[in-house]
Amino acid sequence: MLSNTNDNINKTEFMNHYSADPNKFEAESAEDILSLSLKTFAPKIAFASSFGAEDVVVIDLIHNIHGEKTRVFTLDTGRLNPETYDVMDKIRDKYSISIETMFPDYMEVEKMVTERGVNLMYNSVEERKLCCEIRKVHPLRRMLKTLDAWITGLRRDQTFTRSNVKKVEVDVSNNNIIKINPIVDWTNDMVWDYIKKNDIPYNKLHDKGYPSIGCAPCTRAIKPGEDLRAGRWWWENDFHKECGLHWSK
Ligand code: SF4
Image (cartoon, rainbow, N blue to C red; front, side):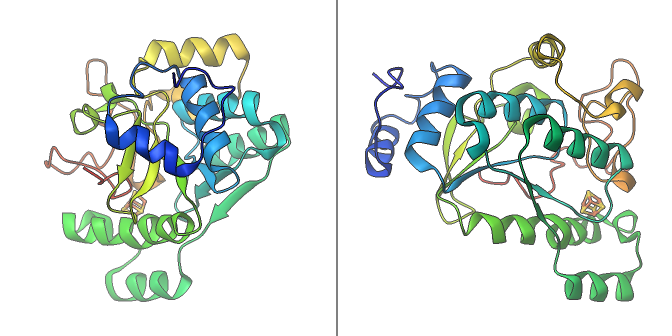
């Protein structure tokens, strides 16, 4: 029934479908889930993009459905790579969309850097998480407070911490808003086939061995055979490496 994306359903009906069976959306395609979600939640639904390979695919999928109404936001931590800004502008130009850019609170950043140094992330896991909290999580929460649903480019096989992510979830760490993960069951090959086939601009760091791209001080290229997320916070031994954006489970 949910595959009939010509039907509009309201937020309550969407939630009722989810509550009745949280796995109900698992058989739906990325396009169908996005179509239904956009019809249900627009304009209070937006895609959180860090402009990695998965994210440019999701932007294209949304734009095919929603056109100029496509809402994309990003977290500019102040520590991004130049290549990320390059692809951000290319995406903006290709689709003629605005990129809603969230910056951290300057007073929080000033206090943190003054007290702990600009590269505090290398001091300890706690200080790295503090940096992520101030530069990423707080701006994300500020945006999510304005939305009824957010969309991500998460994939299950990126890392084992994401292996149980569902296509539709209730984000318990963000006021129980709906979280849509339309390409969670895609493989890395599917992502790159889509990018090439549709000639989508992508972050050139991917050509230099970066499968996963975050802030410049915390991301490196990986070696052949390494885990796809091995280049993120590589100096930490903790296997549960995340920045706090996706701690809903
Ligand atoms: S990824 Fe690194 S630089 Fe970016 S917010 Fe987290 S600790 Fe700070």
